[in-house]
Image (tube, rainbow over all chains, first blue to last red; front, side, top):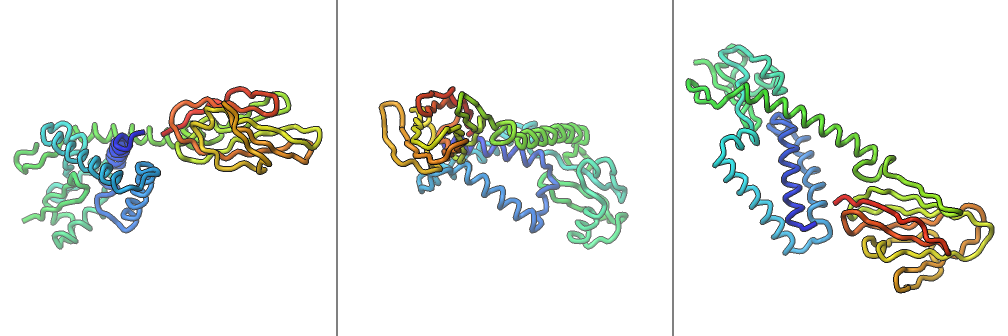
Amino acid sequence: MDPILRVVVAYTFLLVLFRLAGRRTLGDLSPFDFVLLLVISEFTQQAVVRDDPSLTAASVLCGSIVGLNVGLSLLKARSRRLERWLEGVPVVLVEHGRPRRTAMRLARVDEEDILAAARSRQGLERMDQIRLAVLERTGGISVVPER
Amino acid sequence: MNEARNIDDDLGFQRRSWALQRVGWLALVTWLTTSIAGVTGPGPWSLVRVEQGSVSVEYERLLHLDAPTRLVVFLRREGPGTVEIGLGEALLEDFELVSVVPRPQAESLAPHERRLSLDLSDAGVVRVELRVVARRSGRQVAQLRVGEATLEPIQQFVFP
């Protein structure tokens, strides 16, 4: 298989895989998540590079993957629908101190995750001090305190 | 879009997205389970043993590109002697022969095959193992000859 085609297949597969894994999987990187990313990159690198470690092949492969990423970002900028399907939408988890249980369960977020984000980002201690907690598209939880 | 907060939250869309995600998980589990069974490469379902007279060949019919695999020939022998194994042209083109155990005493090239002469001192069932690496993806049909007998074509599929 042509090296560029291998890059396209690997890129698409990883895109689908990470979308399936969900935002909470690698949203806030723990040391183990970081190791997991390194292992995934090692597996993928072997399949894409195969037995051609030349500088020319490396430049073609890097160019292809960056090109794909730029191309996809341009497509997402043109199509809001594509952007929503690929990156999801923000999910409100807490509103005026009241947790939205269904959203939390489906997003695989518990109260402890929200309180940890509230403590680390806003110095808050209790749920009733949170006006809004949102699971962002990047996987992080942003917290807005009650005034 | 929640106008008051200017947040693009849409629980209906997110629910559809989560539902699709779960379908994806199911597909992932199916993929992994079938992989373990040998549907996407070497495994119990992929292993084949073909018998033809006093010779049988064991091989994986589903392979991975660039990954080593074994082609095992079992010979029922009445006594010691020399046996010649011929590797067909297609096998030589699409696979790289890494090793043969036991080591052949002599090797030669004929117009459409590579011949390996093995001096087998044991009687009974003798095992000859060819270790090969698939160098081309797709469907492969290889030919193997043991002594005078041309075996049924070995049909394999190499996943990229």
